[in-house]
Length: 253
Image (cartoon, rainbow, N blue to C red; front, side):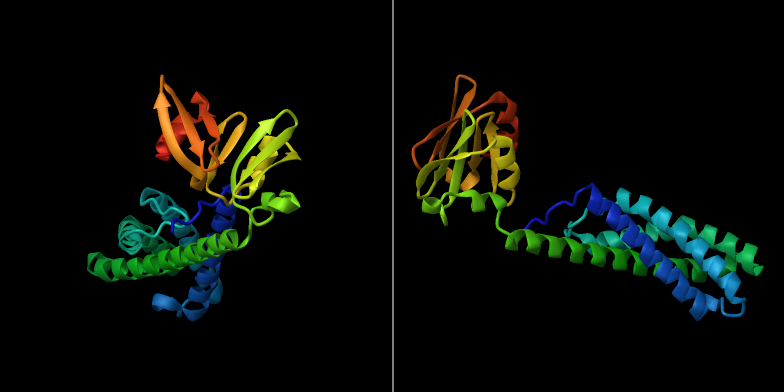
């Protein structure tokens, strides 16, 4: 199943969550005196790990964008986690070396480079994995919620149509004609509002006066540069040029 893409608000929440994970990791590394930093004072360790992890988060976000870590994307994700971690670690090891010299007075030579690179790669791998797992859990939960919640529009169906499959919605003046598996009826509503409430049913607006469910299409034909959809109830729906490109991209026509 293709997981849904999250909107701008959810993306911002993801960045805040990533920054919070980075802050927690920095505090943990500082208090634990990780990677030989335990001999320094707690204040120096907090300054060191806070600075290094913040810069690492900024750099890691840029590298993650390069490796196209999309929300909900799972294909080859762990190969990209490893690739991104190595890409982060190679230049960032120099930043860690500079901060180690600045705050701890560490004198790192070429012979220390392999151990430093291994340590930075390990931290990058752990942080990238935690962020990817967190995002996957979020999008999986979001997908489950979207699947569980029926479209709001179904609550507007007249009693005689309750439980029916919505095949199409056609605008008629100030009313909407509902084409369903149990027949037709009219309700007072704007088409734009109906389209918004039909979210959750695979369908699309195909004309300024029509919204059609994908499962309701019995036939699609094109002639004279125009497309027409035939629904299961025999209704013929015109496809305007405004929406034709979208439908072709979805292989509807």
